[in-house]
Length: 314
Ligand SMILES: [Zn+2]
Image (cartoon, rainbow, N blue to C red):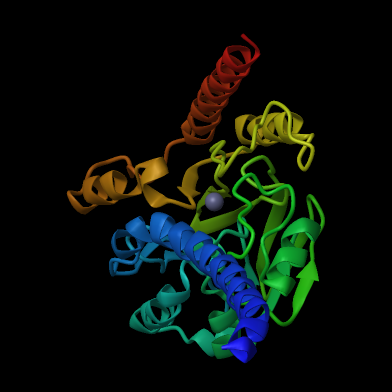
């Protein structure tokens, strides 16, 4: 009895420490799981198989139904933009094969922004292709570490993506070349501090189109992040402005967005399938309209944040 009594405090301490540890681990797991479950409520729909197709010239859609992945081909190797979800990588590789290409011929992989629904499959696609991955400074750091980047409006501690082994850096306005392919990178931040859009020219005979792969411009955040005043991302507003200005001025015939429905890709494809003329894939106002919509969303978000702030103050 005496012995038990003497041991009791140690036993209580032991249990209490373990309880604390258990709660801590549980909270980390639930944050990570909760986040992926929350984000992944859409994963099944995002990852729905999509028959790959030629967009124009040497540019093909090889993504899933809900997440874009674009292949630009040449005799001397290909470029792939975005890798969708981790579970999308095999589907993307199969889509290339269905079009008569090989994942091993992909020489460069590019990324719009490092969220798991656009960058999650890149590590596996790099493993399959041995391609070089190049990204903006901010994105390259996140891709390498696999951990969310500070300043990311959707930053959640403990949520990670598969780290990518070799990531090179690209600069704003830099041209990425493979064979006769030349793709220009444009840093279009806001949705993340390292967001990047891409432009290139694609021809079918004498007809050439200005292709634009536009990064997300939605002001989406997690937790208490505020676009109007974030210590981790103080330049968010100016960054969005830079991105909108780019989209308003870049030559734009065919727009593809990270989430295909944001630029009505499926409606355009259906109309094309019906033989609509001129090609419904082409819309030279599309980039300006995207910027306009983005500005509207940002205005609404700012108004909402200010409203909440003044409610707090009162
Ligand atoms: Zn995102």
